[in-house]
Amino acid sequence: MKESVIASGLTIEGKIVGNGHLRVAGKFKGDVQVDGNLTIDTGARVEGQVRAQEVIVAGELQGNIENAKRVELQQGGAIHGDVKAGSFTVAAGSKMRGAVEFGWEEGTKSSSIHTDRHAEKGLTSVA
Image (cartoon, rainbow, N blue to C red; front, side, top):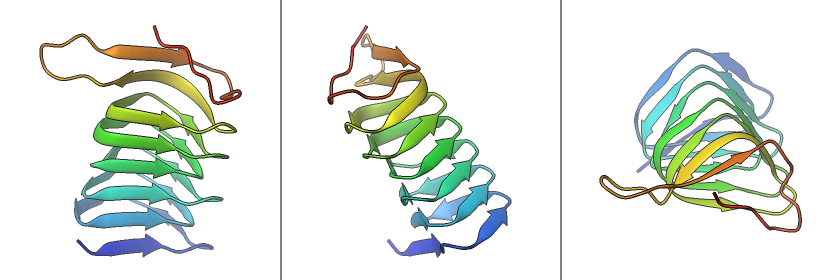
């Protein structure tokens, strides 16, 4: 799949729907729904609801992630919203405020985390 880029220094408002990968290095305000991956680079910001196969957050996301196969919150990244994903990786030095459901499939019990703290020493509590 091809990758589209919102470059550093750009601010865009609207809605993104389509096939392919999306990399945000600037700022985007609006919902994102792609049949591919979303990468939010360090220093970038996305405000809106996200639907993508894989979501990598090194910048800031203000909004929910729905039904991703994999979410990776990298060092220095921040999520302000809820996450539903098949797998969820959190690096030390990242932060999140919201509820998390991961490892779930139809008919199975989900694991969930409710947090409003910084990731400390790479440890996370699972409820």
